[in-house]
Image 1 (cartoon, rainbow, N blue to C red):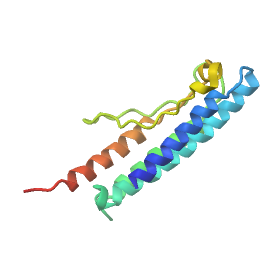
Image 2 (image 1 turned 90 degrees about the horizontal axis):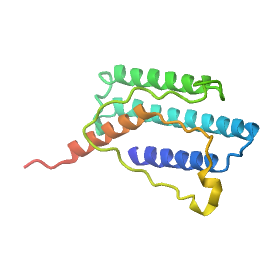
Image 3 (image 1 turned 120 degrees about the vertical axis):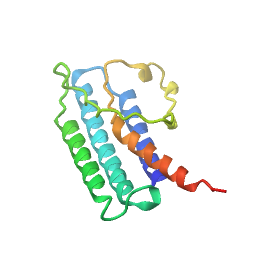
Length: 159
């Protein structure tokens, strides 16, 4: 599940980078790019919420199983729903309302895994445009990292 979640997030990040690279200079084009980024952010929040719910109840990835993992799964679902609502409420422009606030980040002991970066240098000046917005949902990254750490901890041979 973690690999599929990572691939889905990497794909959505690539779409976001392409959207940002090809966003035009006019306000109308910027607004369209904002709406596309908003849709990508909502999709990413939904995917990460589903991963967090599964991780809370799946003993194979460190979850507590059913019924003990249900409170954690419910909390993950509610947090994800709040993130989707926050992203959906965001509006273009308007002094601070244009960007999606990220959820409070969680402290973890391992470094964040790097995702493949899309090199858009071949686009020339279009790749370095300013005036566009990006969105990060940091708590979902932390949830995926914690689930991955649990898998690694349980896979270690003792003896």
